[in-house]
Length: 417
Image 1 (cartoon, rainbow, N blue to C red):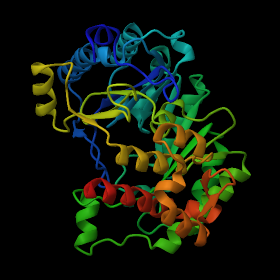
Image 2: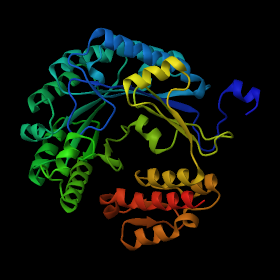
Image 3: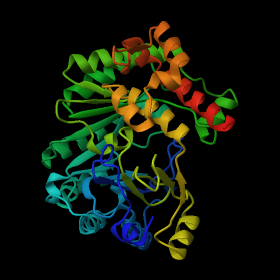
Image 4: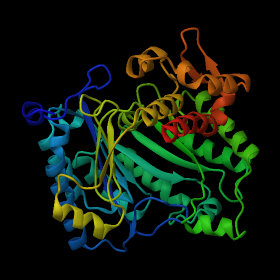
């Protein structure tokens, strides 16, 4: 890149890049860590004011250092994830909202989707109105279940009555965009139990629902319990039945399944999360955060950066150079092709073959003929006359398996080359 280009910031490919940036801020502290959680989190009860202030200052420093990588972009979305972001004070959230809007030009703050993840608790319930005043206009609430027995089996700290009172407080505070998280296929959960969860969830009329099949990551307490035979995972057939059950219930209530795990009322898709699925630019700040950077002349297939997951390492990297926290990886053409298919198939619209060919020089069938034919033969994939690809209703039950075949094919080629 020449000196003039460097001064102007990374060069973008306007065919694939919308010229915007979503900002993700990871707030890692939790009252306690759930036994299935594999995110970069830190148990802190309570969160000491000095610890909170130091972390917020670190985020502001990293934002100032990293903003040059996203120069001349306008802000599209802002997302506070965790961890439990809602244990941070509203004044900290306000300071971070202001810092992001100072770093990137945008419409007025109220017009930018600004999401805060919030767990049901009496503390967060009391802060809901203040979070709205701090600039948050969308809440993602970790309900997970409305059944006390299921919440206990999942190791959640809250109970159903607190979830209900938190939801009531959010609506009373004027939040008109709520996303509720639901975990299914957990220990001991039945189809009937899931149906009851869906009944109550729909009574609250959320604008968005995210549904996640419980997974057992090796380094978590649940993962170790599974390996030791102390807990059983839901069998694949029952999990598939639950996926179909969720889709039927939510689509019957007017939701659109626009991504494998996500449902939205019309006009209420998550703008921020869509940036990951559509391979658009995201600036990730904080412990364990990930960034995706522009496709352009210097990096034709884009790049990503992964921040350290340990607090000491993150602070040390900040102290050394706040503009270069984390490891930067320029994507190979094979990795980019595999991810383009994988991420597109997760979405309702599927893979646009023309757009794929414009980026990679040939249609998907030129690289994935055998994988496409196998998935079509199983009834999991639909191939359009122009080569467009999307999952069938049956394929949506086995989306991860379909995607894994495409990613594995490109990994084999990458290693072979």
